[in-house]
Image 1 (cartoon, helix red, strand yellow):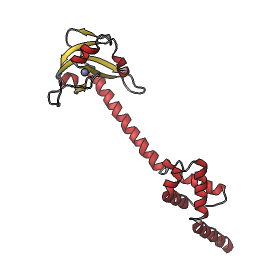
Image 2 (image 1 turned 180 degrees about the horizontal axis):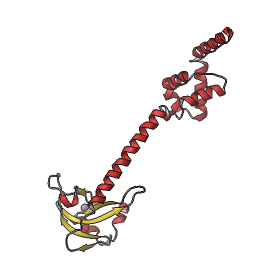
Image 3 (image 1 turned 60 degrees about the vertical axis):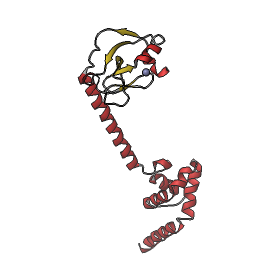
Image 4 (image 1 turned 135 degrees about the vertical axis):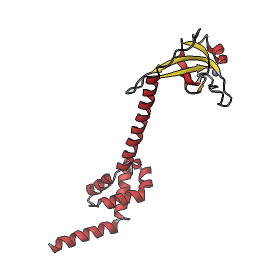
Length: 199
Ligand SMILES: [Zn+2]
């Protein structure tokens, strides 16, 4: 019941569900029973409702309804210190509700964009190593390798490097360079030597 602490001491209206007023069918905050539009399967069309609001950092205030079904209201009302009030529930501030939805969806769009930028920039992020890391590790140990070879190494051994611990991943990269990619490195050194010889 801890997650329902925000409902402690609140005042509720008994109300029939009205889509124009409440927007969406909702679940009873205590038992999860659907309360709302008669089109929804196995729905209750009335219950106790209270207007709520919550502040998220960087977003407009979120206004929404919390519902409790009649049997939960009877069962938990005393423990939760709930009271009933007569009359019809007030309207939520509609423009603010809409502003919150727009801001929430915009934030989700921005987040998806950041995620995809990140994956583009760090395609091997899961391994914890980038192409530049692989090239840098190689250089540190006396291997001059190209970005292409660094990328190839990660593309071909991502799984092995992912499962290795930090130091072991460095050893794995060096082992691969000494054995599997020795031919490529050899060829590059020869090509450079040829180049220098020609000068
Ligand atoms: Zn309930």
